[in-house]
Image 1 (cartoon, rainbow, N blue to C red):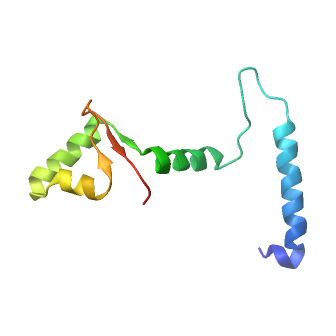
Image 2 (cartoon, rainbow, N blue to C red):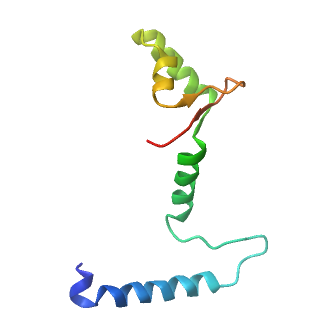
Length: 99
């Protein structure tokens, strides 16, 4: 669908902003702090991961270790090259920095 042929883009954006405002103004259930629109949680999670890194569970970490042994690669070198650190608890990996 070509939005521009049916409605000027500026009008479409204005209407979308109004719709979002209406949705956010709806009453929230007790204990709910915010109404999320589709994709907002994922976008926030991605932004946090780019800033703070991602965590890998022990099973995933162990899978990397097995791959390291299988392919004779150096896991720590790979991790260091991708700004991944191994926290003291060894059960989690944290990926720092941007892609």
